[in-house]
Length: 518
Image 1 (cartoon, helix red, strand yellow):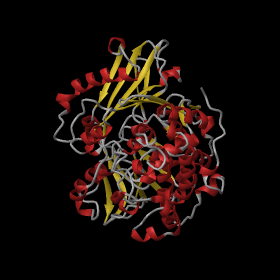
Image 2 (cartoon, helix red, strand yellow):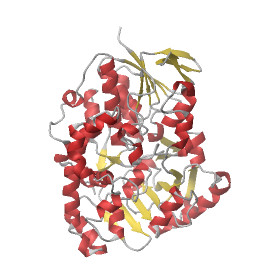
Image 3 (cartoon, one colour):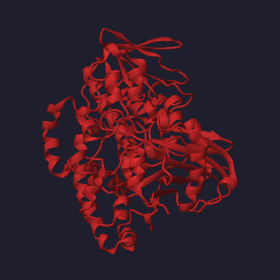
Image 4 (cartoon, one colour):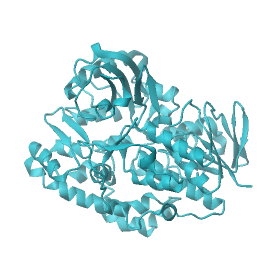
């Protein structure tokens, strides 16, 4: 009889793990608390409007393409992908804007319009980060069991490029002098919920990935990706149970042997946790069984920022680009208010997705589905969202006019708001920190919760709370690492790249040849 694995959570990491494990003959059962798959990468639907709940940028499709091939499927056949150009529009509270594009010559023109002396730095930035990614990829694909893993020759080889003492912003100063131009290449640290002035310099590869491999829109939104993953998993025999909250993980001594739900117990040879890490530890695993990750130690860890969300169904259309990012006039102050002082900003940065300009399936004819996000502090006593919600919502509606979205309120036909308090209580995210544990140097690699969970036997982690970290491509990589380790413990060695038929050269060396969609 084949081994049985229980996966807690049908988020992107859990679904990717299910495909990988089932492809190797493992019996897999996913138990999902919510009534739909995807976790934070699911959707909201109401009154003819469709919104992604969380992620809206789909980057670096290659990792997921390989996972689909392992599962006997083709990502491009399962999901219609459109490469965006411009990738996004940046507006600066300090003045100026950029329509960022992967076309190198046009991007140099965009930079030169703000800071002529900085334009030549773009090609140098691309070249350095192309080399950095080629060195980093093997490290992103390996597990880190402890400090001895730091002596791996693959990691030692990339140390000269790592510059651990530098932030992303400090690293970018070697290419760009104008603060606005630097912000164009480091605001992506917010994908990790971190300030670019604190985020380690290795994460400069985030913006590089956008320019090298594109920013993509899946038809139907990013939730179409997780829906397709669920289809592929079920074809492989995976059982997906919705509305099935796991109440506790069952142990024999220190070994996970199953889970309990309201419907009964589910025995397993191994358990994969795709829920929010800190919340799952608090609610599913007795504190007495944990050594490194006790409740007391979890409370002392650093956590990412949260997000304030507006999902707006509007009558009429806006012709602004698909993705729009506005950076506050005093960005440093805005970040300090979020991460240091834990207060709400009078002049917040924000993001608006106007996806209907690319994908008319997301709203009724002549209407728009507008997604508005503002980074804010995670749950903190300084902010009472029951009191602040309406005021901050009104502020954001005024603010988004700066990015070309004026006159919104009179056109609203559907509205939903999600605050950090909602992320915390409704979506079971510890402190409402939507990007998990912060990605500081003291919470990375072996200092992050291990993929083969070090506190207990038979338990594995996937998602943003483990190595390598947050962001869809990285979460997919965590699934490859954790699934490989689990299969090794079942006595089976796998090489995912060989199984997928992936190229032997680092992926960063092969530039995407897909046509750029206007």
